[in-house]
Image (cartoon, rainbow over all chains, first blue to last red; front, side, top):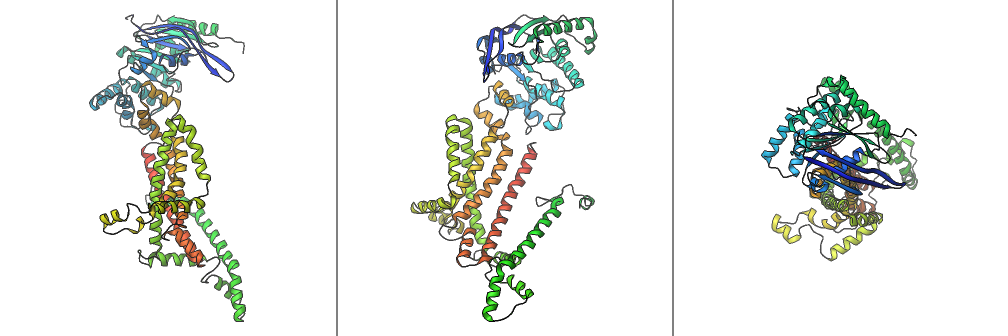
Length: 261
Length: 325
């Protein structure tokens, strides 16, 4: 794996002013993400993991510190369409077919008609939705809709994929299946993925690097480099190595969480 | 009812936009209204019957009295069958170019309504777009729009008619242009503009309110998604805001259409020449022709129902096609 730096956060601070005082969402966050990494952010609610992801995407502006994406500021990177973003809900347009939905970013970015068709066909293949292009979102299951939304984020060939609890609303069986598919996809495309999750097994199964975060104020309490191989069958989760990493994540979460409330 | 439709292979219970499963309750209500109406006719018209009989010095039995209250020329409250008969006469038995034809008057009112509806809807949509995209308009326009609706239309309508007549802006296309195109000036074009303006004045408001809500209906996630594509405001409008507003737009259009019709009818009370359903009601009241008033009233109601039902029809089809129903 190359060591090219893709995302770098330096002394990141972010406070939201609210009616009952400021909320310190991120405090002194430092992180390097290299090309081809699969990084998970895990932590309890309010630990700032989603805020951190949104800051990388330039959907939030830090109060202090810098985020660099592909050597640019986060906002420049956004304007250069450096990343695809997958939200918790699929958010497909009901008035567009699946193909039409995936075309949306391509239309906005000014791809030619021929390029649009080519890209859509390619990413539909990538997320295993061949033959569903002409269907409307309501004709698809929740898992398939979320796959379509991943295809939409992949369509314009951004090297970075930012995912905010994309499988949070799905049941465990569908989730396992999608996790496996996501790893395949990552393996085939060599994208850099930043992934927010609540689930320890999901984080350990997917990631090359696990960032454990804790709340009040939101901060990084541990960064774990996974020793698992890049090739990961589902049953790797029964191995001792997997259990050890999961244990360390759990310890990190416990240490960072104040059980005083 | 259900089984009948099924044996004939119907997949819908709708006939002419009415759910046939609602037929029984609807008919029950109609029957109740009929009973009350006929009873009220007796109560309100019997004084005239007894006065006439008294002057002629004859005694009337109860049955004779009832029969007379339902058959007077100028009753206080005409009986339903009298209104229906008058409607039939003035719709089917008169030439449609005749001043006595309700089709003629209905068409005059309809053209003012539709023209006003188009003006009003267009203006409403443009204002809503401005309000959603411009902070100054957001703060500045809405109070005026609300204030405009608190002015009694019956007071402002004659002023609009007078002002527009004075500046000569009353005919659609103008007499010369219309004559050049059609060879004559079509009746509906004459004096239609002030009426359309008043109709538009009433119909733009529900469209503004509905469209502002509709254009703001996409949630944060949807807007953030377009932000990650670095989409322009214009793109966001065409790709997301406008399609999302469709359900709100149709609801507003239905209210706006009904409001436009009210505006057109009110404006006909003061517009020149005296034509249209509003004018029919006015002349009816001048001459005590209550049956004429009521038939014009029902014609207006039927017109409103037809217009709103056609919007509903388009709404159902569009929203279904857009996957939003």
